[in-house]
Length: 334
Image (cartoon, helix red, strand yellow):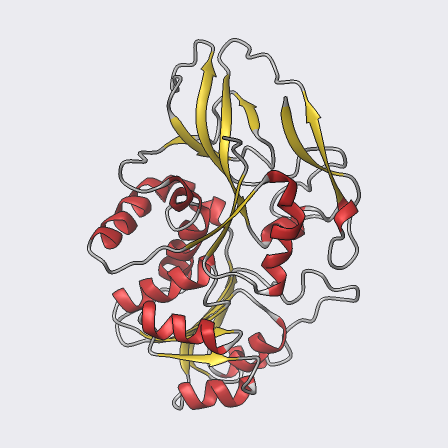
């Protein structure tokens, strides 16, 4: 049998437990040119919240009664004349929150677990890492000497953004919640400084750490923190809009930036980015980041929880902040 988490209703505000239902269905039969994948790990990402809303976005919403969308990594356990994959291959793709996935192989990629463990391929070497890589290099256009500020800096994307910026010779300031996370950013990841938004007023924190202003702000949070960053930008600054986790569960209208005229005064740019636009470059980016990891310049951290039946409790950690690095759910039953 295949345990699956299916979407039963569209949430308003923070999703509740009955937003989803865990069900068991018979394993599907594998047709010509298809593969059956036994998923080992599921990726949990803030973007999942937006995928549940029935509104126009960069990707269609998850349909009611469909398996919840999620990135996955697992092993091919059956292949029916597939031209690319065979039994035993470890593959990553969009398998959803379920123990087994049936696919024609589209949007799946083979990975080498002798080079990195499975969870890393849905973290630093997966979608979050690709988001960080292309977001800070292609959209942020960082250069040596830039002052870079990253919100959600202890998360899967933000932690990699900051490390890449350090590799490229930037001064990096991370914004995170709580002294433990801020210590992690500085002591373990090598950030130059950190702002604890739970214990320091954000405008004062950015002024303290960026006395002459900032060149690049990588935004994972939105809301008041985006406004505070806009107030401190320098000439020709770049604002990368990657996410707005502070706004995803709003029951009222999303709070937009009040200080946007700072972009006009400072000739700045603010650009949104979606990682799927850079798919052609994933392999090259993964090779580069893998090299940085081997050289000890880039650290990867996965926060792994166990059991598909614990999906809801684990999902909540995306919004409570009770995690560090990439949030991963192990769904394989031994």
